[in-house]
Length: 323
Length: 182
Ligand SMILES: [Zn+2]
Ligand SMILES: [Zn+2]
Image 1: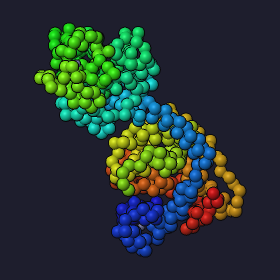
Image 2: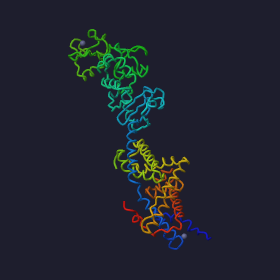
Image 3: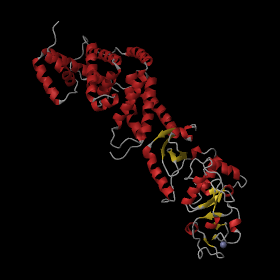
Image 4: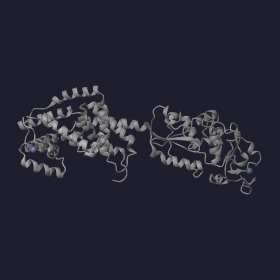
């Protein structure tokens, strides 16, 4: 049994590549040169050319069209399912501790205070069913930036598309929608929202719905307080957060951590009178009437933007509040 | 091309080819269906993070290859697939003129040789010879260099050549003529 010459062994890889149309031009020239002089390699070359022909036939043989179509159909339905479940999220630091923002195809679905935690395990995203969370930087980046601007007071609106899928019921969604309509710098009460949605007796249920608000800050539940002016619950019992968010909007609160109240004497008052007039807190007994029927406003600019005019009795235009 | 295409466009453009790729590697329709779907579900999750200049097709092949390799990592599954392949391999159709019959026989033999190749060689061979991916892309799919990818294809061709040893083939075949009209 004769050994293959060394040159033939060395050129084998190039020869196979050249015969199957897969070689660099330099290699092709080397192979041509070699097989001109070497009959066995010429035979090998021809053999690989033939094989390449058979290999080429494999390309042309498509899988049955109907199995492709069936696989595609299955894909479409699995993809639709994934899209409906998929939420991308990111946790980032903020002056209020770590905050998680999550969004789906439809819009932002969760803003959550995580305090010192930075992991998904600390989030309700890891506990709700029917949701497939995925960490994603780029998507959330712009939201993150806007939220920080908001917390600095450089931005008064977060005009984000919202996805209320994490709300617990349609009633909760209704409460969240009514809350979202309360403007920057305005304060009303749980009772006020209950009246707004046509369920004046449902004050406690409203408070409960806002307790589970999946979109704090964006759906400004911090602007909803007790009728007496007490800040009451926020994100569990983090009244301090509520106080800070209100302060950014120019709404001041006084008192201890556990019993903080808005400082009504620093806010304008509007009692939904037919003349659309807003008042100083010193106008009659307006500062002693329950919040809800009375809306509190941080500034005259806000009152003006809501289409309100200065009360002709107390003249907030002539005696603006000095903070 | 500017910007990022909607994912539906990606599905439309590449699903059939990815399915056929996996179908050839796994030999079983149900596995191919599942793995090709899984490929696009994974792709969907990562799609938004993909740069606008990325080669989407090569990227999809890499995902598909990865999933397929994971799938085969279980030795038991591999054996089952092999069994199915040897059954399906007998579907060759002996009709036709002599040359064509010989050619078909060679094709069947080639297919079963490819199925019997070590997984990396098999994947490299199919990616290069059936789907025309370049060696850079094949290397990325297989977690190896372009040179190793080339070496895998070379080894695969040597084995094919051995298995077709003594098997007469029409010289300088023009394979497209031998194929049945679609
Ligand atoms: Zn030689
Ligand atoms: Zn007044």
